Each structure stands twice: as structure tokens, then as C-alpha cells.
Image (cartoon, rainbow, N blue to C red):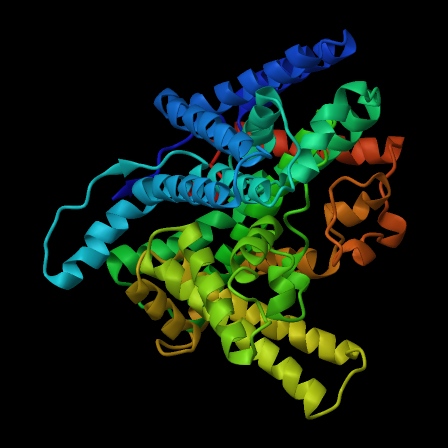
Length: 505
């Protein structure tokens, strides 16, 4: 089986916040001020490698080998004198090598335990320790190789490429960055003297993300763990209220965990003068499932669209092929998240949702002839419906087995009774607060829209500004940030830091 190890250097750990981050940042800024270009980027690479290798030094070999080999393949693909046929074979070998690396560490145990027995062979699955962030840095480099083949990449030094892949704010759990967004920034950042501005923006975003993770996500986590663990280990049959309370708890735990990580990654990068692409944008405000996937894990959705869905033909070959391509893309996205049938079923559900969404849009345009904007009632109906079906899919995503997921889903639809006696006022109030935050509060990118904290996708640019909540480096915002930091600090010292949920993917 694939083994997930507990990680020691976390963004929400005391060692990271009090030691690693300030030391790395101070030395980096010092080197940039004395105009030591290669030294500054070299130091950032060394610090990122230390961050990665702290939990398991042996897996530094995998990361370093991956960086060196992919850099060499990328440079080969950029040779102008190379024939098109030779480039094609080099690309195929490069992509295949990256996929085989993921296949061994992430999917070998799944194949041995779940697929091989189907042909009547009984083999003991190997125990494999999954290298941290292997899916993220491998997909990132596959995109680099494909773009090199397409002649969309300029030549870069090994130090630029290494910092592009290993930059610690986004190395562990994304976003999956694109070379054209990040590499030019590293080439220009050392001439940027706006240190105070970058630090004030970065620290603010980092603290907001840290608060989301430590106070909100970790605060609701025990309630979701209680439901899923009790059903999986004790065979508990949850009543309707218990099932919904646990499912909603996980829905908000995952939301604020991933949102918190995304904010912290953006804030950390901005402290070093780098803008990361947006990866999370209020997905529970989505009015349909297509919009949801434009807001949730945006970098992965973009990668799957550009390097899987469109090469398969996209929507160019008619509706049948379009739906087939959607389902293939979503299934691959499910397998990216993890080697298990629950992940496959989860993405199959979302693929089914998206096909229904596209079909309804065609029906409304071609049959009902409705082209006007949706009304407020229509928007909220779509938002509630989308949220409901996402919650149902999250149950499958979180469960360790399909039988566990099915039992919880049966409970959510009332098979095991209403369970009025299970109602907890405190938990219900916490869930309602989190729902209000998701639906009615501005996100950090809207709050800080005037300072352009992230590289924004075209679909989301028109939603950036949020009126009176726009951030400015004022005394009031400083006080609010300090208050959030103090609340988060008290929470951290009262318990052990928990790892981010997306670390295991």
C-alpha cells in the first residue's frame, strides 16, 4: 500500500514560522540588496531543497534527478537543428518517464491490490512511501516539456529552472505553476526594491491563510473525522442529522484547509517578490458545476484542460466526443488525487454533473431560446443545488471505501432515521458560520484586489474588486492582522499542527 508520512516542516508549524521562514527571507533579501543575482536564487533553491528534504532526506534524490533530467530534456527539445521526428520521440520519452515515476510511487500498490486480482492472481501489494509533492512537481515539468516541444519556451539557466520547480511556497501542494508565469518574475525580481510593500502584502495574506487552516479547518475537522471513522471502523449507521453534520464538517474542513494553504502559498511567494497564479477562488459561490471547477484547484483544472481535454479534441468533434473527452479528463483528475476507486467514482460523479450542465445549457439556448442573464432567484437556486451535489461527492472523496461512503449517503437521505436527539447546537452554529463565510464574505483576492496579489485568470478578473473591503496598508488593517495572528498563535501553541489535506495528493 502507499504510505503517507507525517511531515515535520509545515507552513503552520512553529519551526517554519519562527525559524525557517525568517532565516530564508532575511538572507535572500540581503543577497538581493547587494546585487548577488545568482547567489540569491541559489540560496532560494538550497532553502527549498532543505524544506523538501527535512521530512525524508532520501527523497531529495528523486526531486533532484527529476529536475536535472527534465531540464536536460527541455534543453534538447529547444535545439533548433533537431528534426521534428526526433523532438517527438524525445518528448514521448520525457513524458513517459515522468508518468512512470508517478505510476510506481502512487499507483503500483493500487494496481497490485485492486487490478491484478481481477485476472485471478493473488499478490501481496508492496508498501511504498509516497514522496511528498510528486504529483505537483511532475505535472509542472510535463507542461514545461510539452511547451518546449511547441517552441513556447525560451532558454533558461539551470538555476532558473531549479527555482521554478522547487520554490518552496508552491512546491508541496501547488499551485501547479506555468513557466511563462513564473520564470520571467525570477529574472526581474532582483531589480525590484519594493521590499516593504511585498512584505506587508505577503504577511497579511499569509496570516489570513494561517487563520483559515489552524482555527477554521482544524477546528471543524474532529467532527468530520468522528463520522467517517466511526462508520469505517465500528459500522455505525448515522441518522440524517449526524450524517449531514459530518458531511458538511468535511466539506468546510477541506475548503478552509485548501483555501488556507493557497493563501499561505501566495503570501509566502509575495514576501519574496513573486506573484503566484490564483488556485482557489470562492468555489462554493459557484452557480453551476462548470463554474465550480473554474474556481477549485484552478491550476490543476487548467493543466487538464490544456494538456488533456484539448489534445483529445475538446468540443471540436461534436457532442458525443465532447462528453467522452470530459469524462476521460475528469477520471484522470480523480486518479491524480489518489490511487483508489473512491477517487475514480468521485470524479466520475463530477464528470456526470458537468455533462448534465452542458446539456442543460444547450437545451436552454437552443430549445428555450434563453440568452439573458440569470435572475437573483436563479443564481441562488443554482448555488444551493451546486453546493448540495458537491457535498454528496465529497462524501465519496473522503471515505476510505465505497461501502463507508454508501452508508453515510444512506444516512444523509434518512434511511437510519432523523436523529433529532443528535442535534448539537454548538456544531450547528459553527457550520452555519462557515457557510456564511463561504457564501457572503469576500475572499482575500477580492479584499486585496488593488495590489494584484495573484496572477488572475481571465474568467475571474471581472470579479476582483469588492467595494469597501479593499485592503490598504493602514493602521486599522495592521491591527486586524495582528488580532488574527494572535488568535492563530494561541491556537497553535495549544495543540500539535496538522498537515494539509492536499499533502497526500
